[in-house]
Image (cartoon, rainbow, N blue to C red; front, side, top):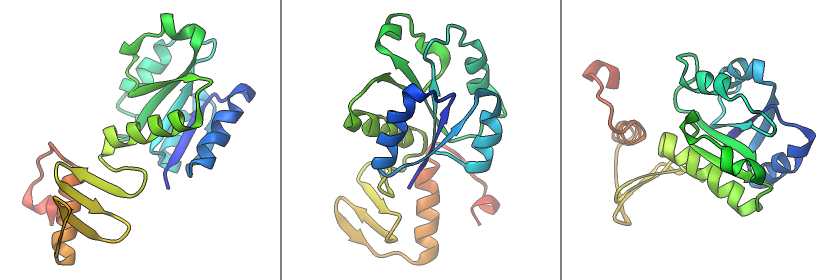
Length: 174
């Protein structure tokens, strides 16, 4: 189960929070000035920013690009359909939701954002090509064939699959 942090969530966004909770996510709310505190304390998988009526997005751009922003957290912009023409994709969001949106679309966009950042799907699986790792049951499959691994082999494979395109020293892996 993944945590979602809704930033500056107005009463207008309450149905979005309910939709995410019904999809199995744990939702918490935070004001803009506390987003770093709450994101580091609660370790959310996704931070969704309410951009309703927010013409100045420079502060959000700076936050998303700051060294204080925890690594591996996906970011979503929640905008209204009348903001679509003026939405600037260079802000740095991983995806956006045009609100109001269907529940299935919201859930799919959140799961996609999580996948893009971590390679871990919301149903506790990790995919890398033909490799499929079931994190809940400690099972590994390659091209749908089960692979028997020791616990250490499994943990090492899981770590490397979750941290693709990164180099680690032997000591760090141990």
